[in-house]
Image 1 (cartoon, rainbow, N blue to C red):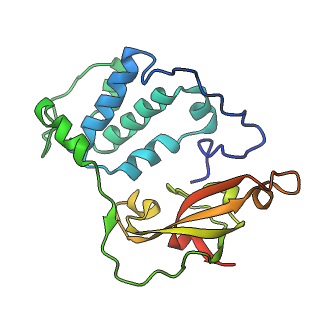
Image 2 (cartoon, helix red, strand yellow):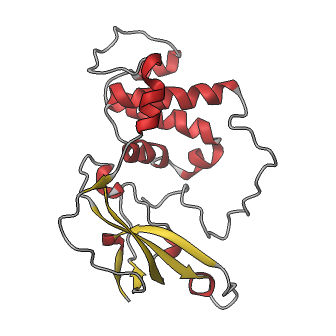
Length: 218
């Protein structure tokens, strides 16, 4: 979706300034927020794209006012509310008020390492040949999907070159709605001036991984 989370190349967004020797977590509650979000995916039954959409799909003033892991918690709260795992009065109270809802699976401490190691493979069997090949010129479509998408706004409508083919992978836009719809996945590289105009640096190249339905022949 188009939202405040898609900040790449927007004029009001400040440059990214990496923090020297940045820790993985700045506070203990951030570590817990990450762990709870990962663990709840099993009983909740949502996938990574549903989780991302839950974090993105909020008003800009709310999204921009929250820190990174505050957004994670807000997304988790939404997913749990949608599936009836918690109730709104429990959110207000900050504690359980109702009987626990039965779930099919839970993530136990003994299985954390194995689950994290396995991850969530997205590659699927190819049923059709790839539409594009390495070296092809392609244009990123101008789309405005109402749900999750991995196509940044700053490349939409611009022409780039296919650099790599990655096989067929689950399509995030539809996967956020529960339909995998696997598609070919490409790395497309864009010239700096193509993206940023005549004042852009022609020596700068930006690469984006793009699913086949994001692209059209240039």
